[in-house]
Image (cartoon, each protein chain N blue to C red):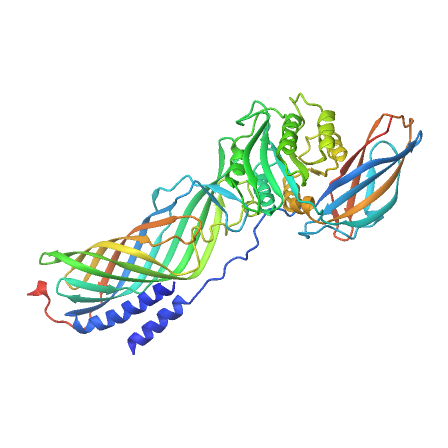
Length: 246
Length: 335
């Protein structure tokens, strides 16, 4: 965690320095919605962290909506230099995950338990993009970087498929602690494709991959695909003529 | 200035930590249950029987020690028609045994647990018991049934030798939930488990066999007497945890009594879980025991030598307003 903080601070100061060299500085607002997610536990069975239960892992598929959603609202600071741009997006992220595990109860019968995690977190995506093509209106770019996430509120719960089961009497809702979530900040790798609309804004599709697992016991990977919409504010910040305007 | 403010915000956020649940692990064990520690014939005449019984009382609110404040008025004895007199109730501590234990635990896999334990809480409870066992004590886990889904009949042993609280193969315990079925062959299973203890057990260890049953034996060729005899000969205590209303309380109480083991009749799954939550301590740690001496005068008929009598000890805790399960006591009048 200490290394993440160091990286973060270093990148912040680097970005601040970059603005001095940039040809254009844009400030904007971003809205992102991530609905395609995959949570994958690489083990056949997991032991609950706060109980003596063990659960079968049976469903690691990519899912639309049902694996969770992320709603991100944030600010964008973008510095352009020729075809390259660097972006910092301090954002609020309402980040949810759903993951179903199965508890063996009888021959051919497993009870499905869906563990839900809700995070309020501050995300700081930092990435660099390269604009590889342009028309009069649209420019295309790819970008890559990292997203540093700092959860400050966590809520967890679970539901059982068997309605007659008073779940809390049999299972612990915190059983996925340090398996599907932890309370510490974490980093994600970020990769995306972006369409820039003149100086108005941009639309991107982005893929995030969490670096490392929340806990040490089980290897768990998190993949997220979402869309972002960014509007640049009409501010007269640093504005030199840039390559596509020449 | 701006970059300083930014870095300060980042540092504050990075230092945030969300409080989590405590370290205590959850087990659905909020139930009260009484166990038979031991029982025995003390004397008789043609018109009376005197017997003694020791019981343990596990309370919802206590974890790691036993209920220790009950008085004579809290014990009620019932059974055949007649008058009962609780002559004395003594309470005493049983210190932890000096020698380590070598335990084989056998789960009755016959039939279905749909009525008695539909959510397989037994797996969690057994898992806790496994975690509680630490070196130099040892534990071997097996399952028993005939014509069911086990890989060996009447006893399947996974080879899970557990020491130092490590859950050698916890998955095995939970996957057993998928493999119930077949006929009850608990006596044959117990007989093979005794052989395992005799052949492989540590010679200086206290040897224990723990049975979890939820029905009566349906298919064993081995008799109760031969199992008892083998256990007595090898100095092995057989503890029985009987889940639900089906198991014959007198039968399993006698199996435990005659081999120096405990008998835990658990009408509900949660009472079973409570027993497992304390089982390691009950086997290897100190216990608090109530010792009762009871005089029974039958209202009709005579007490004949060689007869069997089944009594029940009821316990009510007026202080906590709790009523515990009846503890069966089987008394054989010597021939």
